[in-house]
Each structure stands twice: as C-alpha cells, then as structure tokens.
Amino acid sequence: MELRATLALGWPLILTNLAQTALTTADVILMGWLGPAALAAGALGTNVYFAFLIFGVGVVTATAPMMATELGRRRNAVRDVRRTVRQGFWAAVSLCLPTWIVLWHAEALLLLMGQDPALAAAAGPYVRALQWALLPFLLSVVLRSFLAALERPIWTLIIGLLALPLNIGIAWVLMFGAFGFPALGLVGAGIATSLASLFMFAGLAAVVMLDRKLRRYQLFGRFWRHDWTRFRRVWRLGLPIGGTLLFEVGLFNAAALVMGLFGTEALAAHQIALQIAALAFMVPLGLAQAATVRVGLAYGARDRDGVRRAGWTAYAMAVAFMATVALVMLAFPRTLLGLFLDAREAGNAPVVELAVSFLALAALFQVVDGAQAVGAGVLRGLHDTRVPMLFAALGYWGVGATLGVALAFGTALQGVGIWIGLATGLAVVAVLMLGRWVRREELGLLGERAAAPSPVAPPAVA
Image 1 (cartoon, rainbow, N blue to C red):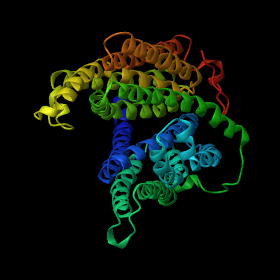
Image 2 (tube, rainbow, N blue to C red; image 1 turned 45 degrees about the vertical axis):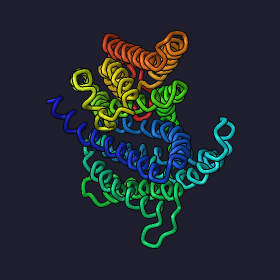
Image 3 (cartoon, rainbow, N blue to C red; image 1 turned 30 degrees about the vertical axis):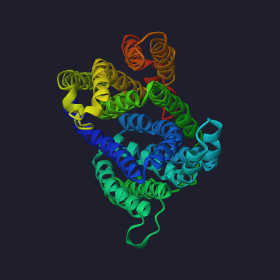
C-alpha cells in the first residue's frame, strides 16, 4: 500500500525534475551554438544565478512538510494550507527583493571573484535578463509543494513539460534573431527563461483556481493578510534546507573548478560523468520529495507506524534503484559515455579513459547518494532540518572537500582524488542522515510536542 502511494506521488515528481534538467541542458546547447566565449559567459552567469535560486528553492520548500503535516492532522485543513501557501509567497517575495539588487550587479560581482573581464561583461546583461525568472520560479515551487502535499503532482509535470518547448522556442527566436526579431544572444536566453518561469507559475495558478477540488482553498484570496508566526516558521524550517542545498551544490561546483586545474581533458571527463550521475539522481530526488509529503502526512496524523512505513519504503526504493544504476555504470561505462562522446575518435581517448575512471567512482557512490537524498527528505517530513544542515556541512565540506583536495594535490591521483572526496562526503552524509532517522525512531518519532501538534509549533527534535 505504502509502496503504491509513494510511487504514485513520486513518478510525476521524478519526471518533473528530469524536465527541469532538460530545460537547463537545452539552454546550454543553444549557448554553445553562439560560440565558446558565449558559452563560458553564460556558464558564469548561470552559476551566479543558480546559487541564489537553489537557496531560495530550499527556503520555500519548507511549505511542503508544513502543508503535509496540516493535512495529516486534519484532511479539511483549508485555512491552514491557504495561510501556509500565502506565507510561502511572502517568503519568496522578501527573498527576491535583495537578491535582485545583487544580481543586477553580477558583472561587478564576477570581477570581484577574479573572472575574465570580457566574460564578466558578457555575463552581466544576461543575468539582468535572467534574474526576473527568480520570483515566478519560487512562486511556482510553492504551488508545486501545495499540489504535492495534496498528492496531486500530475499538474506540475504537465506544466513543466509544456514549459520545455516554450523555453526552447523563445530562446531560439530571441538568441538568433529569427522571424524578424533582433538577435539578442545571451540576453535572449535570459528573457526566454524568465518567460518560461512566468508561464509555469501562471499555469499552476490557473490550475489551482479552475480545478473544482483545488479552488476551494482560495490560495490567492486575501493575499495581504499576514501571519507572522507562520511566516517565521517558513524561514525557520526553510533556511536550513537552503543551507543544505548550498553545501551540496557548492561542493560539486567547487569540484568542477578544481578539476579545471588538471587540464581540459580532466574537466570534460568530469562533466560527462557528473551529468550521467545527475540524471540518475533525479529518481531518488523525486522519491525524497514524495517521502517528505508521505512522512509529513503521517506525522500530522500522529501515525507512528505510518511515519516508519513511509520513510523506510522511500529508502528501500531509492537504494534499490541506485544499486541498479551502479551496476549499469560498472558494466557498460563506454556505452554510457558514447551518448556524450565518440569513443572511436582517437582525439577523445584521454577524455574517455578518465571518464571511465570517474564513472566507476560515481557508481560506488550511487547508493549513498540516493540514501542521503531520501534521508534529508524523510527528516524534512518530521520538520527536522537544522541538524541535517550541520551534517551536510560536516560531510560535504569537512570531510569530502578536505579529503578530495588532499588526495588531488598530495598524491598522484589528481582528478580521481577529487571523485574519491565526493564519494566519501556523500557516504558520510548518508550515514549521518540514516543514523538521525533511526534515532528519531528509537526516541519516539513524534515525541510529546507532536502528540498535540499545532500548525506552527516546532516539533521536538532528538
């Protein structure tokens, strides 16, 4: 029963994540058509924007476990859910206002980071066009959390799939000047992404206003009504989630920067192996999102057995899938690499050999990568986010980054040392998350405070 419920909720979330990844990949491909300089400038600008985006996503994602708990406690929690959505919107707006100011000066920020002045000059206007995607995207994340909490994620998938060709079409027209439009280059890509994000929010907003079962929540009614206690709760839960995501994403971004020091072949091999691993990661990520909701519903209902079933089912599904992926990576590395690179071409041989080594290490951390993702998800369902953030800081940076740098520069391993550090960091976080989950079980998953939960009271944390 729990397996079916998790799978029914998880598969649309998994495909939505893949669609989002495809959207980003399409942008990179179009930038590549503009030339290497444009691609490099676009990558710089996107990385600056993405750092703020991923943090914002973490903050507003706090609405998912909050709504799930409210619905688990009382299925007809219309007012509580509406207020949580509203405060999620408020959090998105309050986060975007200062972020826009910073992103408007992206060129100066990149220069302070020591980047090439020509690339920074090209990235600046691109980020100014791209930054307007931030607010509609974060608002759409709140609505996605609402639909997930109600276990109706199919609309999120449909809107995401529609946004993909829309983004590609607008980007192509504006970047290259088709149909009489001026060729805007990178700025056109930023405008396209902003319009696609606006489309996703507008599409989801239309769904929740027109669907008979959803419009009774009146999510956009009395938007000006404040709920400061709930607003603070969103930030209290969301800030650690944002921090956790930043620690993880920052580690992989730093790994790419360090990998570039070992040559073009090492960096290319790293990006290919990482792309394959990232595609596989979309499955446990979707299961983790589903687990947050399923655990949150049981948590709100004070169903201890339900919490256990939801958590362990998601763990089992993620580990089983990632173990299968690991076997495929180990058994058919060159077949997978052939999707990105022609292994028969002699000039690609150094990249292929390095990528095979990196992919073998990626295979070793697939299971722990899935476990740490689901571990974070189930703990969020229990409103437990602060300690997992500390685990992320310790595992990713205290262990993973330190070990990776030591092996890369202190031995002859170079890029392989970086990947050993990544794998070790993920393993440490996975073990810590699993230990935290087990400890919550041993001490009582719900605790005294959760025995009579309130919409905004923080749960007891072991």
